[in-house]
Length: 264
Image 1: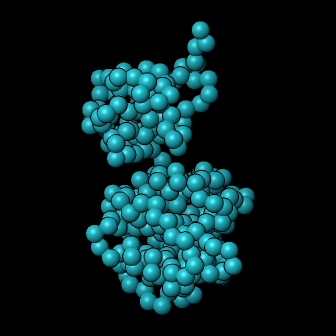
Image 2: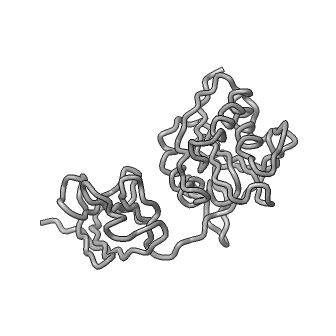
Image 3: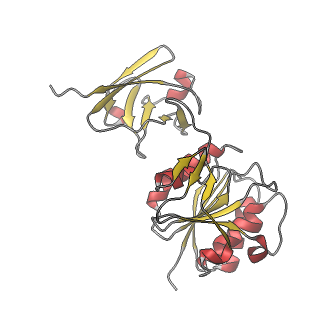
């Protein structure tokens, strides 16, 4: 049987036993699985940040990989547990709270009346704990449901064997206008804007005007704009934190001016 890669993303941190418990539950069912830690330092309960990290990292995983994503403030409530198959072949497991939504949207799902309708080549299933869990705590579905589901998939269980099909999933609230998606550990500000060829950009924020796209972090002495490695418009400052300098945090609005690029 070919080796299956299982990626793990959560807000569990590294101080407690939570991440190790999830890994152990995967390996109990699929001892030959290769486990990849994406991050466990998503800020606690920050679903939007988890969704961003998941969507950014997904293209780096081989098709057919399994990703368990757990940022789940509603654990134990009526929110549904999900497994998705994307058109790329990736399989995602996690709570139906918008966490999987950005990845599904970028893979071809469509936003309809505030929910995501799965598209061509995509499939969704609501996990059935009776088919998966040997125990089910009300507060740790990462260990008791999501990780075991990933282990079963890695061991060869088909996705449709884990629950009932669904064609719609929760989407994150739509943020109007240009916003800050995330601030990375370097203080770089990642916005919701995806730069387009032939367009130049200016950002006005905190009394500052930042004009023109640069190619690298070393192309300016102060604040600069560039296209991030994941394809978003990023505000940075070499050797310092743009977020601290500008007082920006995820969700904040920024003013982005788009102009046709000049060809002198």
